Image (cartoon, rainbow, N blue to C red; front, side, top):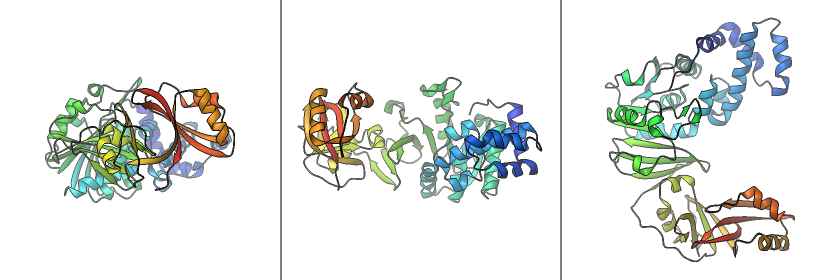
Length: 397
């Protein structure tokens, strides 16, 4: 993680850890945004203004963090704005920790640990953790979180440059490079901090290692001696992880909750065929992992178009890797015709999905002006190269 911490930020956080700071945190917990000014005005009569502001800021961060960490943990933990944004969702971190545990790992060096969210998941899996970051504030927050959650005996926090840490005594390494810079998200892997090449070198120095990268990492950027896993949670792709010391060259998609895992079998692309009665929308992790052929095989399906990840089939079959829809109409792309069809069916609740179309869902919804008590889903896509619209509804499997 790039160290952008100011001494004032570190001092402000230290003040929150004092008896007065803890009392203020308890007093402002759950404060609604509309009441912040009144609460701050009242508390500043008896406490330093900077400390009151820090407490209110921390309360806001805890509210935001509840979506990732759960309310019970978030109410006890400490956060930074970057930490809330960049931290791994707790369910995803638990999955990764479980994979380490299944490998027989009992200790992990967590490099670029940030506020310690991944270290917490590892420790809760019974794994001893060395949490390393170059940011004084991140280390202070990670240490506070280990203490707050009763995990201080399993988590050692060290402020250091990850490149200078000796990980020889640890069973495994987890590396989570910073993928944001001063101008926002970083897409060039060599612009990560540390760069991907350096992170790979750190990973190769351990018996087992997991290296977290952006979900959009090109497959050709995956080292030959690594396996790649794409993870989604609730249908949203959250991360890609390069695993070292496990199965070189393997590809897998993991869907949470579950987990449900689909692995690559080197299948050829499914054939392009005419639309069948059902359309299957593969999970984003399946698509990122290039495992659409494996998902299509589960439902005896083909593709609507050679370059689009919509699977079509004449059979309805339960699958954990795609969402099924029953298709009632297949139309060439024509807004006027779609509008007439929706009015005839009394469709007022319209879900618009698209792949391979430049039309924005909101734009289409505005043009067709859906009205009525019924619901439908329309897919804007291509059928064997031709711009098309498929109308249907979720299928009950």
